[in-house]
Image 1 (cartoon, rainbow, N blue to C red):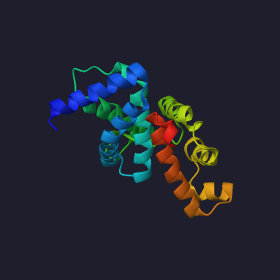
Image 2: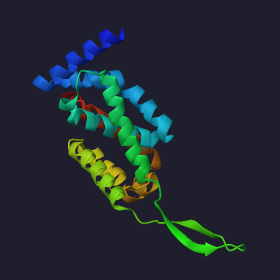
Image 3: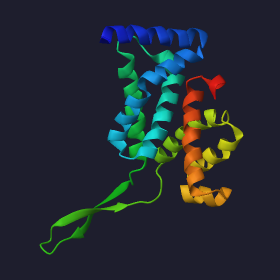
Image 4: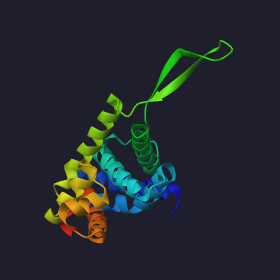
Length: 198
């Protein structure tokens, strides 16, 4: 498929999604770009589980803002920009802030030097990013099957580890991992509008 044909196909799907809310149009867009988006995010983040989460969140953001897409550029360019910005926000949020203390130290030769102190406290930007991330997920988590809902809330809202979830829900670790994988697939389907297939 040529870039021109791809652009035409995407535009048709976008128009259908926006005009009629057609779940199949969202689903098709997601099918075309989900894997490429995941690998693009994985290159930046380097963690499979976090990359899957960020892929879900990026698609959620993109579908929510689909009306802002302008056909001047390829849809893939716009979508990957949304994902890139979301990944950068995540990476920035998870980097410990440093505070410079200038002219506080003098070396043996009388030269003044500075040093950085790392702070373990979240800064306002980190808090805001976390709230936005949770808001995106919360809007779709309530549509999950009940057996997955608590699991997802513990993992993404309370940020429990797999071991902590297993202990909290009194489930084997393997079951927790398997059910989280299935719940992630459900989240993808819900975001694409394909609720009837869940």
